[in-house]
Length: 532
Figure: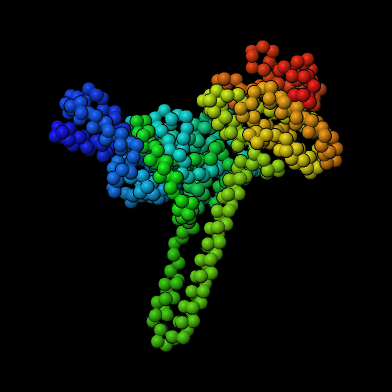
């Protein structure tokens, strides 16, 4: 028993600094050679580790684990390193997470975000306080649940129309901070956009202002704060870019057993605490140098206090009334900002005309569904439909009436899709439906039901309306682009076959496109479209 205690004492620094994971990585041979534990001593040490892993709050009055962490040193209001201190939104969240989880955090300063990424890869840091999850980063980090969400924005020297994605940037130079998740996203999904790496968001905005790049992409809060701080009045926010930031804690590989404690701590953070943190740091951009005149007035009043006591008292009362009114206005502005942010978040994922999901959201949702398919081995299908001769409708009745028809068709589709289906306006008169856990035959049945509902509906101005359908089931290991292209080819086949038809792409490697209206036996069903 004495020998067992001495061995545990010898390694207690490792337990306190690296946590349970480091101890569990000590090999049996190392324990035998270093401590020469008896068999009963090994059992006792194993029970201790199991207790700490399963019951992290057991006998905890002070933090039992200390983790080295890194931040982006120049990313306000999210986080920054100033006056040898970690400040910003992530600092406040980290304080709450530490108090709820029993984990102590110790800052390891870095010079830049690229230096932070290198520190995580080389082991100089064990944790990133605020980071996006990405495929590349999953190779060396394990991620907690997100605790802060924020959109990304595009900034240009002049307003060129509202951008909802990066498609319109082909052939232009896009500035992005080196090592940010946005760089990986743009290079993967928009290879035709020329990427220019910058050291920080501040450096990127200054390059944009000097005309050396065409557009810059960055986080909304930090970018907006820098525009005010640097007085870059000629730069304009022109739209949204890429997926929203879902900021979370990233632990280096080997510390995964700590994630449940951190996730539980995140879940305990109340909505009021989140709002308080948001308000505290989004107010930074409104700070200004104090006007010296009120101090001059106070000095003058103090000098004349005896002679003009009544006048002084009158001015003090008036000042207090104005201050109360300004405080009320500030509170109203903060509430309005929160409401506008919620509205912007809705508009970033929904079509402004039909109020259903937009193309940007659907691309993200399909990527999630593909991950679910690969993990749980179920079927899923895409259903793409296009209004027949819609250009003729716009030319004959005008775009306003055309928009009304799009809204009516949206209502028909929403009334006939299933609860699990995801409906979006893909673009123009095209609508895309994601059918989770649905094979090709079931998706064709849904297409037939939608076709029948459209036939039966009386539409504004045109009375009757027809649509062409393309259906495609996901093939193992294909990308979203390949999946969508097969479905889109089926839609074009339906158009070429005479419109108002349902065509589908099979996955058996045979004939690629099938006309559901012309086949004698479609997937074992009747060839009539209504039966599909």
